[in-house]
Structure formats: structure tokens, C-alpha cells
Length: 300
Image (cartoon, rainbow, N blue to C red; front, top):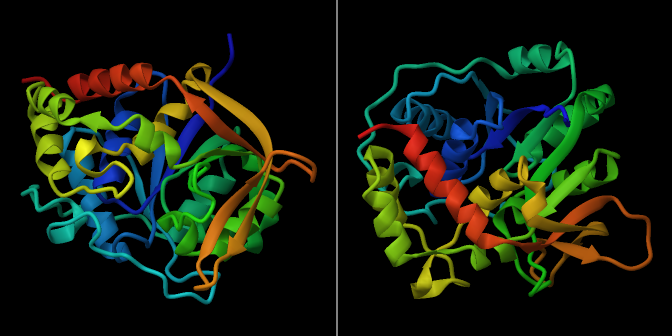
């Protein structure tokens, strides 16, 4: 039987990240060891607070470390507030937390002292991870795979937040030699939750009710009025459920559009391959996984 690696998540907690946190924390196959709060959807102190609020809400005690501020790229691309509501969690009234994160230097010490490799799940911009690799390339020896959500197969001009926020960081990680597993946004669109499914989630327990509430503020232009996209949730599913995806080797790289925004491009022919990219997903199995995780998160 394959030995599963422990998982460390890099998050910039908004609505989509909250779903992925719940899935990773409540999946019996995932041993979520630590979480790194990164700048992105919110300023870093807000990300720390919201991460703790989600964890407290589902009754999980997982170490949270504070990531680094600033980007590798000289860009000011941002869409903060896209998730709606105060604090980027749809205005849901989470109990306030008094917990404090551990520092980034403590995370580096923790990471360097790992006794075996880990899988790194990045559902945030890659700034913190890229800076770690630049400062100490030996950290790559501790990483089995980096799972990342970004790009769009159906529309190569798509400007995705995680890439455009710090495209230089994405290029650093792609060129570092770590094994990248990339889940483009296509599959968050294809595995969208219908409004009926959202209502069903809301009927499960208090976690489901919370998700149903915050989903009201989550909008994706590709899905429109059909339902709720599931980008970060899908890549969280990928970490431990590869059999429900089709992955192809690819040369992935960053390109800049006429507005100077970084976009992710996928070249499946020629050129040295530096990643594996998801090209198909069995969405019904993902949805069953999501419902099961929500059920496990809290009892009625």
C-alpha cells in the first residue's frame, strides 16, 4: 500500500479556501500537519484570523504559521473583496478568535526538521513558498509534490488570481525542479455546485449551514447563475484522490498579457516537461467527497 505523505497547506483564506480547509482537515486520508497563512485575498493578519475562525468552527486544532509579506514580482494586481462580505468570508458571524500564529522563522525551523517529505497544497499565491526556495534551495528536498490551482485550459488568456498576484513566484517554483501538480480552474467550473446541492449541504449540520450562507457571496463569471464554483476544493480533493483525475505531463510557464498581468500557459507538446496538469475530473466523486467531509466536520 502506498504510504501517504503528510500535507502542509498555504492559504489566503476566503470562501473558496474555507471549503478546501474543511475538506483537507476532515478527510481521513489526509494528515494535515500545518497551515501557512499568506497574503492574497486579504492582508496577512486577516488571513490568520479567518483561518483560525474556520478551524475553530469545525473543531480542528492545527498549527497555523504566518507567511511572508510582499511579492517577488513588481506588480500591484489585486482583487481583494471578491469573495464578498466583511473579512472576505461572506459576512458570516464567526466567533472571534484570540489565537496567535507562530512566526515564519518558526515555520522554517519546523519545515527543515521534518523527518520525511510532505505534500504542499498551495491554494494561495506562491510568494511565500517561492521565497523559501530562493533563500534555501535545500527545502525542495522536503517536498514530494506541490499541488497548485491556477490557469485555464479552455481560455489561455484567463487571468487567474493566484498567478497574476505574483507571477514571478509561480515561475520560481516551476523552474525549481519540484514536482508540480496543477489543477486549472476549468475543473472548479465543471464541478460546480448547483443551488439544489448547496441547499442540501446547508441541511447537513452547522458547518453546512455556514457554507450555504457564505456561498451567497461567492461569484464566478464562468459559472454565472448556474451555481457555485469549487476551485480550491477540487485541488484539495486531488491531493489524495488521484484516481478520479486524468493528469498529463506538460511544460507549464508564465506569460504576460498586454496589460502586464501574468497568466499560466500549458504546452503539452515539445519542450521539457516541468509539471503534471489535470485534464479531466470525475466530478460526481468529488461532490460525494465534499458532502462526506461536511458531515464529518460537525454533528447536528
